[in-house]
Length: 142
Image (cartoon, rainbow, N blue to C red; front, side):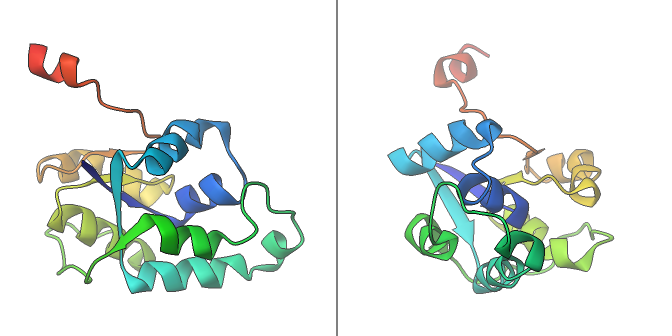
């Protein structure tokens, strides 16, 4: 099962905005094909963001309770130790640390995180803004 770390904007795309680019990820989560790794601090961040006025005025699309979806789909793990690479935005560091600790794919739309993709790849972490299922046949053919 593919381990994933999802930043808060990706979670919002899944359960608040219903972004069509998140549909493959939504389907994979629903089918149990991926393992979404998250910490309590990530849930707390989502809860804080959901209270922002620009979101509370906007209707939810897919879910009446994105926090319940977080609780249903995320595998809670302990916070990770600091990764060898540090993000300029300290709020994003917890996602990087967790992805490095679990050699997970990190899904983020944050420019500060995306600029670290090459460095994190050296540690076995794939950083991308959209998730696409990996074709096992293509992997074994390589």
